[in-house]
Length: 85
Image (tube, rainbow, N blue to C red):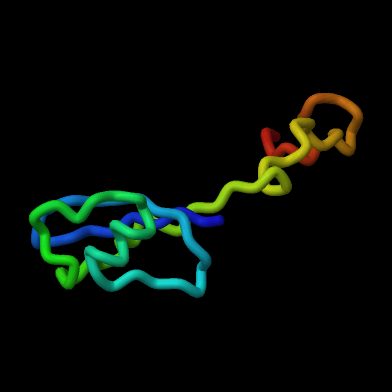
């Protein structure tokens, strides 16, 4: 599940939470409930904004195989696929 950073201007806090891509949080109360935090002195109705830095998702399939492609020339790597000509 992707993670997102939300910022609350009322208390100057940034909180990272995981949720579905289709979901969006709009208030400090919603953010605290999702993150398992106590709202403290900040009103639950205080607005939060999702920061552009959020939405990171790393899955095993995106990590690659851990092996480099073979060079088409059979040597490493002038003229090969690695682009280090």
